[in-house]
Amino acid sequence: MNYYSLSDIVKFALLFLVVALLVYGSRQYRLYADNAIKPQDSAVLLIYETSDLDFLINELSDNNVQFSKVHMEWASETLGWRRFQSGRYELEGEYTFYDLFSKLGRGIQDPARVTIIPGSDIGRLSRSLAFQLRPDSSDFAALFSDSSEVVAKHNLTGEGLFARMLPDSYDMYWTTSAKNAVERLLGEFEQRVAIGLSEEIDEHELTLDEVLTLASIVEWEARDNAEKPKISGLYQNRLQRGMRLQADPTVLYALGERRRLLFADYQFEHPYNTYLNRGLPPGPITNPDLTSIRAVLFPEEHDYLYMVATPEGTHQFSRTFQEHRQASEEWRRWIREQYRIKREREQESEDNS
Image 1: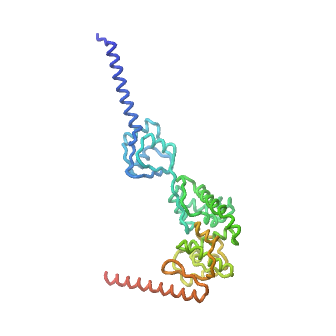
Image 2 (image 1 turned 90 degrees about the horizontal axis):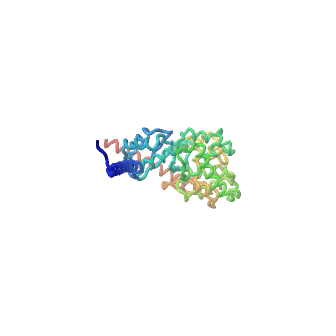
Image 3 (image 1 turned 90 degrees about the vertical axis):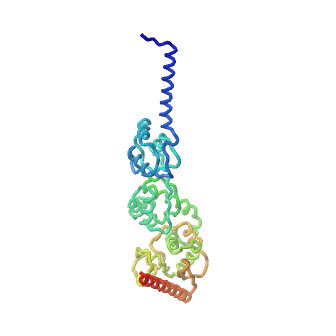
């Protein structure tokens, strides 16, 4: 019968302890190793609803993130993270299994940069917001209808709410509801325009809604921000003289298209056609940016009453109708010349094919 000495027992115990420590250390290293998750480039995970590990593995693979599937499954079981919250998550650099699971399991999102483009319309703005945030475009479009709860809450029209979607870039969580996103944008407008420019608005002869309506026309009309105060001054000159605005963008808005206007288009009967109706149109036609709003509040003082486009994308301004007719004829000659050049190029292309 073999008997182990006390020293042998101590040796076995020490060996067992060393092995246990090595196993424990190996497990801890795999769980908390800094390079367990390695994106090749920065990656963005979009999780639309609470998902399981299989979904996460597929999303990581689709985004070219390097990891061991076997180790990830083991780590998920060991750490107890099996469900991951909806949200938008940016992955940059390397992660441990614990850090990744904790981030997604707790729903610690990274904000999305949401950009509002000026000179848009309700449809385009709704699609743009839906592209940048989780809600559907129809969710946003519904908020800009006259019957929406946000419109009623703030005593606005659908167009009035849309015009207050101040162009800029904002940080929002991707899972933000359409209502909360629009309320956030409206709050930015209130702070920066309604409050920030309250003295200027109070002193102006136009109300805030009228300022936005005119600014929306200036936004559509001007390609160059530097021209906005001059265009605004021209339109306000016409309003003060009781003249029709005769703003081409209002006709395009009435037609629901963005194209070169034909002579017959100016006779299109519509409340927004400022060639037929005096004064401002019933509401805004775009969401103007801050430069357009300020251009209405601080118009350039001059005697111009007419303007026509130029080949450079700006405008030629005139004080009298006779000057305007001459400038318009120059513009038409330039347009005809462009069509002639286009036809010649098309003919040359056909001849060479």
